[in-house]
Length: 298
Image 1 (cartoon, helix red, strand yellow):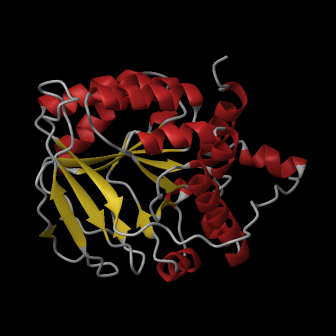
Image 2 (cartoon, rainbow, N blue to C red):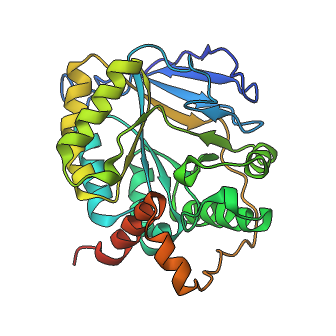
């Protein structure tokens, strides 16, 4: 068994969350020589709902050349499994921010993500803009997803949350703080939902890293081109001397019992037409397309 040392990081400015790092070794017996691996595991104290990522997170949370891999909007049977296979080949880990609707359809994929040692956070039940919702609706979107994800996962899931569209409000922030749920933003946005090819996804991530030197990377595990991009991206990270950091929670999320998923409200036809013209809704439509067309293999 590897010896483990705990190193205390500086307290995060937002929420004064203590962070602990455990060194890990890529040269595990199951990993091929030269695999990207995980440079260290960071244990996060989520007390007080700290922020991670720009602009509110601690800019020095990661050291130069360190990255955190994150995927939103899944799970999707085909795409998430392809992402998992690419990560496993390089013996590295990521954080998956799952959507409740997708978890309800594909709980077996959540189980696979957990069993392969990745971190699971959440991304609401139906991907709405939480800043436009009442507190009661926010609670349903958030808590029903944590509940569903934990029921699907054989391992404790993390009190990690990423806002759809990265859109928060005082109401949502106060709620996350009261629930000790870490709030995640982004440093490097692949914008993979805008394209239909893996090349620009990789190019955008690497350009962002060249500019920033480190950061939390955002991708989506519901697009074929995003899944296709992962092997190349991992190879580029390795060639560039970047180190992958895995985030884990010091304590699992505290579930709230008997929270029902939000009920979809009928939308007026004119409102639907206006919504189709917005970029935000474009992303939501693509996620819904993944729900409709991505089916488990026979």
